[in-house]
Length: 256
Image (cartoon, rainbow, N blue to C red):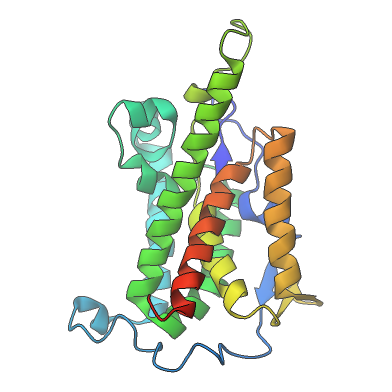
C-alpha cells in the first residue's frame, strides 16, 4: 500500500516491487506435499457458483478489477475516488468503511499496479489451484481488510504522537493510502509459509530460498515503520502478513 504525499497525487512508491528486487518468477521446487491432500477441491464442494470457475478465472477477475479501478482514476472525479477508493482515518471516521476493501483494488501509479499484479498472478495461481478460487478470494479480501486496519492503527498512533507539535507537522489522520500490497502480501506469504524450502527465482535467474525472502520482506516492513517511510506503508504490508500467519495456523489445524 502506498501513501499519497499531497493533494496532487504525487508519490514515489513502487509498491511490492520495492522489496522484491524487481520482477521475479515464482517457481517451486516441490508442491505443498504436507497440505495438498483433500485441499485441492476446497470451495468447490458446496454447490456454489465458485464451482463454475477456476483458479485462473479468479486471478484474472481480481486483476481485471484492479485494472478497472486504475482506469477509473483517469476518468472519474478525483474527490469521489479519494473518498471511496483510498483508506484514511478521515474516511473511516466519516463512515466510509467500504474503503477498507476498495482501497486494496486501487492504484494510481502504473509501476505500482504492475508490480502488485505480477505478485498476485504468480502466488495467486499457486494458492488458488491448491485451495480453490473461493479461498483465494477470501484470502485477498482478508488481506485487504487486515492491511487497511494495520494502516489505520499505525496512523492513529502517529496522529496521537504528533498532536500538539504545531501546524507545520503533517496530520497523519489526513494521509490516505491505496494499493493491493496488503492483500497480495497475505497471498504471497501464505504461499511461502506453506512451502518455506521452495525456491523463488529473482529476475528469472537468481535462486533464493522462499523462507529467507519472507523474513527479508517482513523485516523490511518493520524497518519502514521505524524509519517513518511516508511513501510505502510497512504497516499495511504487515497487516497482510498477519492474515497470512492466521491462515497458515488454521490450515495446520485443518480449519480453513
